[in-house]
Amino acid sequence: MIRLPAPISDQFPARLRSLISWISGGYLLGSAAFIYLKLWVLQLGVGRIFPDSHSYAEVATHGLGGLAFWAGARPFTLPLLLKFLGVTTANYTSQAVVVRAGLSFVVLSMIAWLTIGLAVGLHIRTPALRLAGFLLNLAYGLGIHVSLWDRLMLSESVAISLFVLTIAGGLVTIAAQQWLATTSSVGRLAWFGSLWALGVLFSFARDSNVFILLSVGVILLVVASWDWREHSGWWRGWIGGLAIAVLAAALVQVWTISYGVRWKVPFHHVVFDRVLTSQQATTHFAAYGMPTGERLEVLKSLNRNGFVDSLLNNSRFRGFDTWFSHEGRKVYLVYLLANPAEIVFPPARDYRRLVHPLSIEFLGDEAVIPTWYLRASDLAFPRSNVVVALVLVAGLLASVYLWRARQAKPCWLVAGLMIASAPMLMLIVWHGDSVEIERHAFQAAFQLRLGFILLAIWIIDAALQVRQSRIHRADRPHGIRPSMAT
Image (tube, rainbow, N blue to C red; front, side, top):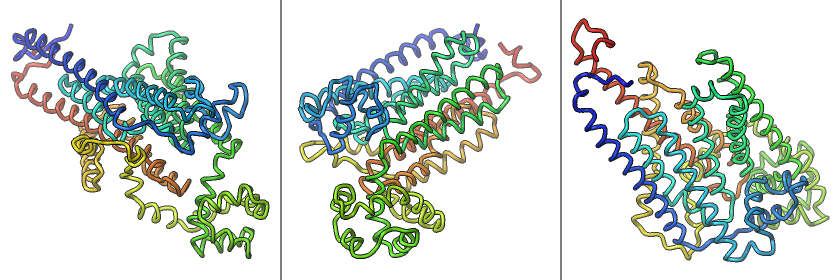
């Protein structure tokens, strides 16, 4: 039985009924509005395909029993969905197929955002704020910066939705510790297995996501080593097992990147745009054996696409392709380690494309986006340096204060990991390819802002709980213990 503070206990039943009615209506109306507006956004532009779409469809045509599918030219998550939808290289350009794919993307997105909205509420103790947090998450997922990917046959929409679902699963796991402590081993295996599968599908949506998978695996190992929880025996064992499974999946993905040679074209882009344009880098590569001479000058005179095509298809330059395949990445890594400033400063100068990516142009000229929707989306996905910096500083200061007040919760680690891993992911994306940086960096910018949103909601809730606790202590008669003031 819940015991309530005496000053409001007499009026509480009527207030409770009113509050439950109001909040329930808010959840239903918010969910209905979100679904309607998601479908409305879907019709703002036509579905589009890109050169990458063909390679995803090509992988989808391979059988599930072969490495050409699971470790081929593209990570397998999107091809797996396309195979389920019946997409092939023969029909992927059909508008009906593009629409069908777009609808599947948006349905997955709806499920993901509604789920995380509810999952975040499990860690909020203030009822009205629980509803506000639910609606705020839906608003973030509804913005054009997130929703535009639902119409494009690329991996971004699926990756975002799976990331959100994985975060939601982690939050539910933290909140469901008592249930997990009492359930059977089969139930725990099913639960943690599902959570692992979500994380693996997310990571295999885009190869750069493997960094997040590795980070999560390391964090889980650290958490499993702490003996600070009730039921710590079972908890540490299962979290440790999950950590090992996550790290194993990450290592498998790294192997598939090499087996499927998925690194080659992005690395050729980097060589053309950042190595051959720098005398220092070119000299370093030549010192480690890169072919030079007239053929190198010919390659440098080409445009980027011509450079890549010549390396892959022109026998005259096969020696360059062979050297880049066997030695290029190691030499580039040695170059970066020998010049640490090159790791940080060039991406820092390019920060706008990393921190504030703008990808609306991917919708094409046919898309007509209302001005009010763009402005509302910019509120949910702020692209101002000042706003992002202020939110970061305020969040850090409030987190330290509430941690000292013993109000910090384990769920804060989830938001903190999203925020802390975003800058490193941006560096990996920038150094991993020199083409379409905004698109490749969107995951990092997206999770940075989502982490801010979740942390802000939980900080406000903790602050309200501190304030409420102080009010109750002030109203309590002197000399009466909490158990007597009921």
